[in-house]
Amino acid sequence: MKKIQMVDLKSQYEKIKDTVDASIQEVLDTNAYINGPQVHQFQKSLEEYLGAKHVIPCANGTDALQIAMMGLNLKPGDEVITADFTFAATVEVIALLQLTPVLVDVEMDSMNISIEALKKAITPKTKAIVPVHLFGRTANMDAIMEIANEHNLYVIEDNAQAIGADYTSKDGSKKKVGTIGHVAATSFFPSKNLGCYGDGGAIFTNDDALAHTLRGIVNHGMYVRYHHDVVGVNSRLDSIQAGVLNAKLSNLDVYNKARREAATKYNAAFANHKNIVTPLFDSNGDDHVFHQYTLRIVNADRNGLMDYLLSKEIPCAIYYPIPLHSQKAYLDTRYKESDFPVTNQLVQEVISLPMHTELDDEQVKFITDSVLEFLK
Image (cartoon, rainbow, N blue to C red):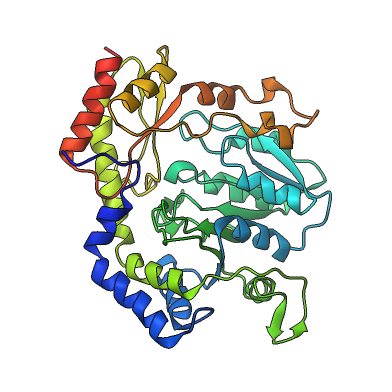
């Protein structure tokens, strides 16, 4: 059996090697390393794929979130609500901009922001909501947009983990996540469903005026060289990374399908086990693209399972072991432990198994058999 990887980028590369290499060589031949043709091509291709009017490439996913908030002209002290159970980048940029982060609990089944907790957190100072499509599962955007419209709030989708996922609204219409809110941010970190070979990110919006502002912000606030019209940053997707992404974008749906197929096999192996709660996804599977395959281990030794899998050279991880409200950087007297019952439970139960486009049946069987051996 081939060695199991948490993310097998090498095997993925081998299948698209000629296309990737040709894209990189084109950058080397043209010497257009910043904002070259590959960047513009990727921007247009991603706009077409998403059905978004504007894609603004940038240097990484964290920058994308920060720039999105800068573009909305939020002011110090404005409150921004987001989920407690996610990676720190989501709250980090809120704090960096001297906005006030408001962390709320998540739902047990989806692990995404709790609609009830969100409603309770809104105050006159609230200006924006940042739903995170965690682990590749879409948040409840119908409810979130209804709340935002009722209270005149911006919605900034954190789509770092769910690019390519479809969201089906109550009326039956479908949109790609990242195109539903006022603006969205994504990451092209190598392990993402659409990943480059370094850092990269992008912002999406259908708002023409906002897109214009964002394009200035990513380039030192310039629209004309040496004319600084807005306060900006230096955050650009370099051409080599754009070349890699151009080579991969046409395969994204295939990659996400492979992830869903692996998740289906995992779920089947673990079905009805008293100690395992598997991730939910709909019958079509298009609401979840499985950036991570994350189980809940209930009434059993989650940490012992992790040690056992690692002893068998099966990589696994705990995303995320400490809630954001308990992190030293984000401690706040406003928060009570009773505000976060679901998050506090999840951090004790979750474990993520290998999930990538190259998982084969032999590997999945070895992984699932090993989990079941420990939990027998």
